[in-house]
Image (cartoon, rainbow, N blue to C red; front, top):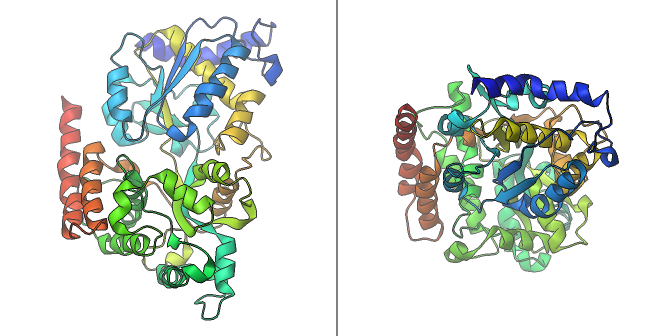
Length: 455
């Protein structure tokens, strides 16, 4: 595929030069983009991993792209926790995805043979923080289309109502800056839920099939991050489990101070949890900036002024200076096995998405993405209040918690870990099997990845 890689290095630059000399049939004039799409003959097929974006991408964004450029395109969205299996199936077909997710270096080990080197493309050049790309000594193979952040989404109005009550353990939300304080507040809110007119402190710790990722990925990120920090590494073939007790205490706080009994968690979905928060039945829910759309859909009267993030505190020294978990696994690579024409069309789609007025409008206002490109001005930011908070936290001087969960070995690991967590959460299992699933299984699955990559 040397010829394809050479094209990736020069294709977009050359096409932009042509566009400066002629007015093409599809020049994207309506979107303020003078890029020449008229010579593109290939097609775009994006296999999307994010279900929350699926409807907008499939029903609105792709039709707008085709209408403005004349380029045939489609998006197919995988269901929760089905992406890897679907990608294996789709990439073997006669018309495989041209654009697909490579969300971590672990994923790159599996998919590098299909990944085009993007190091000399306009796409990579416009990335403001090159460290967000997934690369190795051979090149750059995956680039994020959005930066995201997550933590404990909090209803400020409920907290203010709580603070006005006799015996409140804090005077304002600003007093919550460590685990001990968060625990005291959550337990007191749970005890006073009836007086506050709510159902519980935390939304449901949902464990319906396919939703374990909130805990096996996002919550487990906390002990992973701090263990890596202690060791001065960004990945490891083995884990010591140094902070598993900390993981247990934040997980216990969630399930014991909730609007849902632990025995019922296996039937609860993320939709249930977000509806509980949106309808102001609970004060807290762990989730990310992408959750605002769901909140607004469930309650159009929910005030953006009444929502904020708290970091996920787990009781480590110095966590008063901790910020949100900010990073990206929304990284895309281009299939180097498809035709040069399809590669060209896919890079043209990326250009349209992050340069045209229409594409950027989708990114900012409809999808709420925090796009990490220099093609966006300081004023071109999402109206999503949670996205705005992620940006504020990233500039706050607090210690950003990186996405260490991107080093989790594979879905098999998450499935075993999630099953043990559910048994514990609903009271049918002990904690020791959770630790074993998290620690012992890590080394096994890391070894399996290495063996698979060598074959």
